[in-house]
Amino acid sequence: MPETMKIDSSSQRRVLSQTESLCPVCLKKIRALRVTNGLDVYLEKHCESHGHFSTVIWRKDPPFETWTRPKVPIQPPVCYTEITKGCPFDCGLCSSHRQITCTALIEITKRCNLHCRYCFASSIDQDDPDPDINKIEFMFQRVIKAAPSCNIQLSGGEPTLRHDLPQIIEMGRQAGFGFIQLNTNGLRLAEEKDYATSLKESGLSSAFLQFDGVSDEVYMALRGQALFGKKRLAIERCARAGIGVVLVPMIVPGINDHEIGSILEFGLKEYPSVRGIHFQPVSYFGRHPGTVENHNRITIPEIITALEIQSNGMVVASNFHPPGCENALCSFSGKFLVMSGGGLKPIISETNSCCNKPVRADIGARQTIFSVARQWSAPDVQGSTTSGQGAPSSISGMDLDDFLDFVRNRSFSISGMAFQDVWNLDLERLRDCCIHIVSNDGCMIPFCAYNLTDRQNKPIYRGQ
Image 1: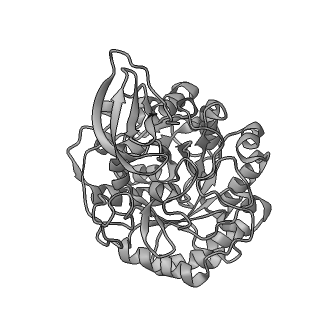
Image 2: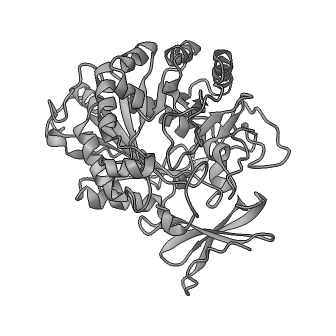
């Protein structure tokens, strides 16, 4: 029976623009429309075999039409696949892609020590074979050839289950990568006293820490265990080792969307060990429970609004802007200075404006590569180590050197990325992707394409 998810057919309903997507059932490429009902924006598409689909992609303010960041597309310098079937079936990257690699993800294990309710990778707790060290070296070399200046994220599964993780980090450093980040749930960092130090000594720059809230009720609902204490201990041990920490909350309506402000408050209390927060609205690919409905989604503007309301105005919607690297509809970001007492002062620059002239996509990507590496690494040793300590209440009167040192050591980032699933997949967004997963055969596949699954959780790329 065709699946229908129709929006309110009010007189205000109008088509904003057109793109392409896939049918969630058969994965056939089909036309898609961005449609508004006067308040929200939906991606609507129709498959001749499986019916009509309508998925919310934007709710309320800031207005969808104003959320733009013009870019001049650029073909990746190295394309590992040729175009035969067309986007998104020739990812690798192909010559139709419109952005270079900003971050390359290398998945070093499928194993995991949690069985989460939601999981992009559908990770398992069995002894599934890991790629051997020679395969991982091959992946590093493929990235070096295609994107030598990009950042690296080691992911999984849970990468800390590999006992040779320090060796892998060292291998990446020797290959020439200046910023290596670990995507982790933090359990081993918390459970082994000197483990973080061993990773730092091998060259780890940053921990991308799964952090869904500040109460065990949230972790019980999403991860099946009471984990808040272990998250705090993982942060403490990363701080002692000199590893920068980024908190990564997956936001699920009705489970932890009420803790967005509390997560920000917690992150600032743990500053400068915590370098920023990177929100991820829930996406429905890999492992997820139940039927996908619009009331189970949260969009970028809703997270921005929640940040303003739940922080009591410490940050406001105007502090955030579209990305300079990926497609504007993929993410938001804001950069701040931590002032005396833990308050935040937004860092405003011309590049934050949505009215700038188009910039070449690779220029925006390289700026992001540098900014992420600097922001998400631990601060300089000579910088302050306690929230509020040594932080002036004003930057007026500083000379240039003092100001630059202050910005380097007192900055805090708040950002978020909305990954696409088969219901809201927009091929224009996909072609602008800058976060690429390295496949077993050494291809560079956009994150959302690699993880994409149909309604029955059958993938296009993962595990193929």
